Image (cartoon, rainbow, N blue to C red):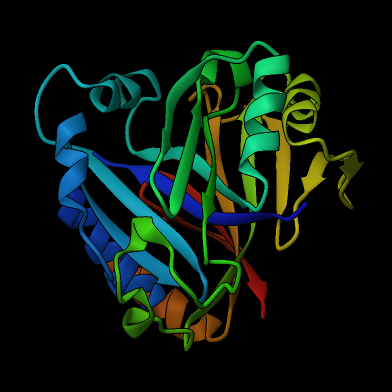
Length: 256
């Protein structure tokens, strides 16, 4: 059973501002803007990060779930973790066994979506999808549009190496996600509980910024640290040693 970290979703009050920051600081290019998200009261932009994706969504009308999430988490930040599997039926069966409610359960001929209720998972919105015919990571990925490959740039940022989920009870949250994805809880060098998927790590840490439970950070492997930091300074981003703050997310810089 394959399980990959494929797409990370941020949420912002102002889409254009965060899109500009991601482009200028990380050298990323928008590959796709999905008109279908308007049905949820959102607009979006999707950036490829080699063969993973970083998406930003923003509310375009009042009263949406996205707007409520921004209020609850006190501003821009992480919104969703999307994993790619090759055994969607088994993943759905596991979710049913655990009694987890589904926010979305939709199957098209080549793409299957399973979005789980955050009150039953904790941490953030968790989505597990399958792209039929997308086993090769440079192949199709429906949420990124038909020709996302044209927008790939890896001269500044190479890959997303980890997602950091914060919680008042990180041990319990790690155990819950471990139970859902059926992978063991391990420990990183700092003793934080982690769950390792095929291409990345999910790390669970205490909530220390007062923003509550949610997706708080990403580890990214960088090819040009000096260029990235110079651009971050010009954009007025907060920089704490090897952490750059963009869009309410802590981006931890790792060498490629």
